Length: 86
Image 1 (tube, helix red, strand yellow):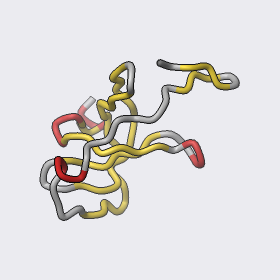
Image 2 (cartoon, one colour):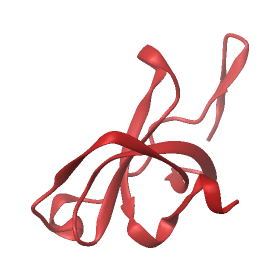
Image 3 (spheres, helix red, strand yellow):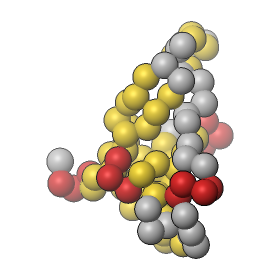
Image 4 (cartoon, one colour):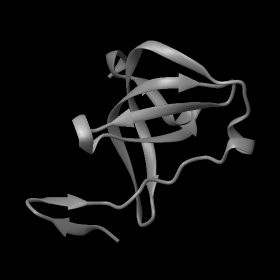
């Protein structure tokens, strides 16, 4: 469940696909691609503005947030869409 931390809500850690599910090998994306990604948390699923920083044939590693508060998780490729598509 979400909990209040200072002046914002903290959702807890995102759920990430296990290595066996995402397949391999994984490749870095340079520069990172801006996307909208559906990310699962323990108590909800949210669409977040993120960047793809790596990918495999079946999954992508997305990162969202800023600086030291940045988080990342592996999600299915179908869980993302380009920010340019709207």
